[in-house]
Image 1 (tube, rainbow, N blue to C red):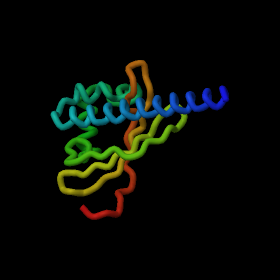
Image 2: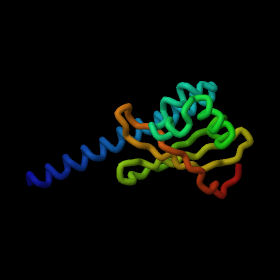
Image 3: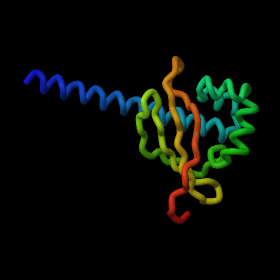
Length: 133
């Protein structure tokens, strides 16, 4: 009986931890998108992982990359968080974004835990879902 209770307690703790991480992860993504909407690339850059910061060097270069390569992230009309999946040390969070033209875009945000909390380590555009606008 003690083993069963211990197992149930452990499962509950792991589930609650995963939900807490999921909430933190989606908050980071939402906060970065809010910064993009305000053209506040300095704040948006703070949500990027150390690897991304090294790659782009400055918030301005990072902002230029987002404006040109991810316009749906720079100016989304609607953002919907979908499922997340633990992949070893990282979590992949899928996000559905409707752009200003009504087109849907499916993205995968690669999230990593750092000393500053969860940060975005990359975004991949996946195939768009086959649904109407």
